Image (tube, rainbow, N blue to C red; front, side, top):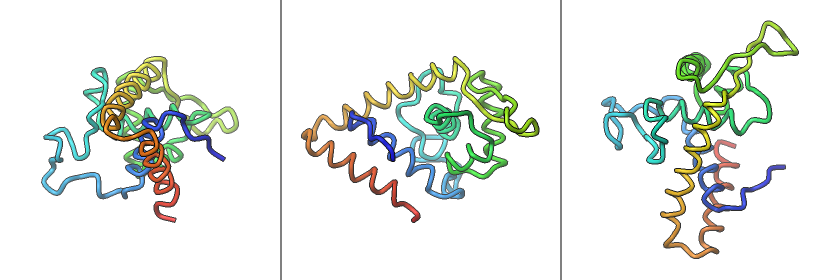
Length: 165
């Protein structure tokens, strides 16, 4: 049983992130290597915090998934959460480690396994991205009534819940 965020902008952002992770592993790359938001990549989010400008949308999704998890995730769990294959998740983890946003730690239940957790810097990055996203979505929702915003959040959440079922 999940609890829906009170702020419609948060609910919409969560649903959109969930849908983006479920687009499929091969739909992330534009056929010509460029996306609609310039040369930085297909589907670049407009709310990427200044500190994250070096990060790809997938790295940001990784940070968001780790922030949403109640416990550190395995690489395969992280791959599933953000909709990439395990080798791609491993490369994203390394990028996150290199930037100081995530750390690897030994799984206390199985010393052969590694778990991935956010560092304090990763938590700060997540809070910045979340704040920028909330502001951008709030501006976009300004033309909506409160009821319309709540309904959009409800419908997008329902779509994300049922995508690929």
